[in-house]
Amino acid sequence: MSDVRSVVAHDDLFIRRIREQWTEQLGRRLDILIAGCGRPDPLRVERMEARITGIDEDLPELRAIVPERDDLDTWALGDLRSVPLPPRSFDVVYIDFLVERIQYAELVLDRILAGLRPGGLLLIRMRDRTSAYGFCDRLLPGWLRRAVWRRFVPQSTVGPLPAVYEPVTSRESLHSFCLVRGLRITDDLRGNSGPALYGPWGGVARSICALVDRLSGGRRTAAHDEVTLVIRKPQNHFARLI
Image 1 (tube, helix red, strand yellow):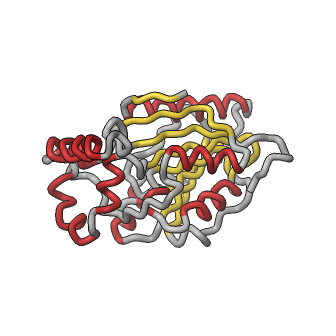
Image 2 (tube, one colour):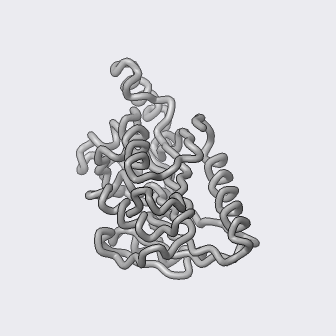
Image 3 (cartoon, rainbow, N blue to C red):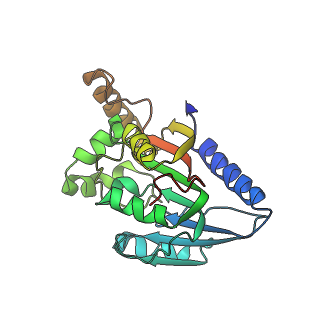
């Protein structure tokens, strides 16, 4: 399923899929991992028994945010290539705008997948490097990005965080990643949520993205900047499971 929808629709989709997972497990407690917990947005799983763990990079911008989240039972900040992740420990893994801002993204994804139980859900939300917004975000020099950040984004936005955008951070590459690892994509949505589009200079940001779209002949689309996937790790032991 592929569509362009609002951020609210994406949030509703994730909660529905988590609730379905909880129902399938006959009400057993859900163990949930949030990878990218440095954003202040809580994962609301009311009326479900859940234990939520958060992990993220150890960055100054995140150290003040993570301890304030009231939905996390436990959390850790550090190098995501080595932060402890017990294998097959989670029923749901939510990767929240993390993939585009880390190095060694495929290695980190494989480590996170190893922590997901067979039959578990992988929920991914990330910025698309091939979109006009992602193109501008990753090409903007770091010093300039830091200089203009507060002028362009809403006041409460965390950052600026790194903009790495390795090849896996595109919709097509992520589909290939899932195919190689025997993962099944059940939902595929696209939308616009780039913070610069909704800040004080949002009109300027949208105009820049529209210009990039036109100059690239649509290859760097302004129609979306966010990719949201719901992925299931199969029970099949012969699939390539990390």
